[in-house]
Image 1 (tube, rainbow, N blue to C red):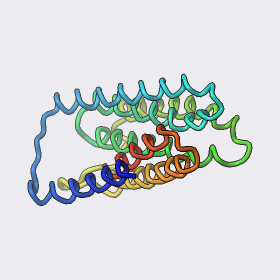
Image 2: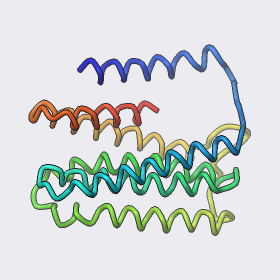
Image 3: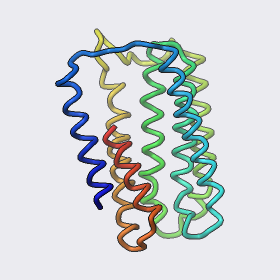
Image 4: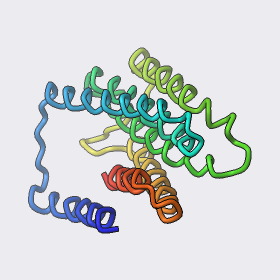
Amino acid sequence: YLVIGGGGIAGLVIGVLLPGVLPGWLWPHEPLHSTLETIGGLAAISMGIVLLQRTSDPISQKFYPIAGGFLGMGILEIFHAVSIPGNGFVLLRSLASFVGGLGFGLLWLSKTGNTQAVIKYMPWVITGGALAIGLWIIGFPQHLPVMVREGVFTPTAVAPKSFASMLFFAGSLRFFLDYRNSGRSEDILFSSLALLFGLA
C-alpha cells in the first residue's frame, strides 16, 4: 500500500511542480529522443515476451492481454522512434500509449465467463494490428489527421492518451483487487506499474 500510494502521490506532485518550476521548458534533441524511445520499445517487447512465457500456469493466463499490450506498445514506440517529426510521429506515440493501456484494460475481460479462447489470441491480434498501423502511418503520412496546430496538440493527439490513462487506471485497480484476494507480490507490482503509466 505504501509503494502504490507513494508512487501515485510522487507522480502527481512531479506532474504539478515541473510546469511551475520550468514553464515552457523544451529540449528538442531528436537523436536522444529516438534512442530513449527505442530502448523503451525494446523493453516493452521484452516484457511482452517474458509474460507470454509464463502463461502455461492457469493463474498467469490473465497476462495474455497485458503481454499483447506490451508487444503492441513496444512496436509502435519503435515506429515512433524511427519516424520524422510530424503528424505520424505524434500519432504513433499517442497510439503506443493507447495500445499499452488497452492491454491493461482488457484484463477485466479475463475475469468474465468463458473468454479463454479469445484471450489466448489477444497478443497476436494486438501485435499484428500494431504492425499494420505502424506501417500504414509510416507509408501514408499524407492521409493522417493534424496532430499539432500552432504548437499545441489537437484533440486527435490528446484523445488516445486520455483513453490510455483511463485504461491503465482500470488495469491498476484490477491488479490491486487481485492482490487483496491473492497476496501475490506480482499483482501489486503490476498495479503500481499501471498506475505510473496512467499518471504519465
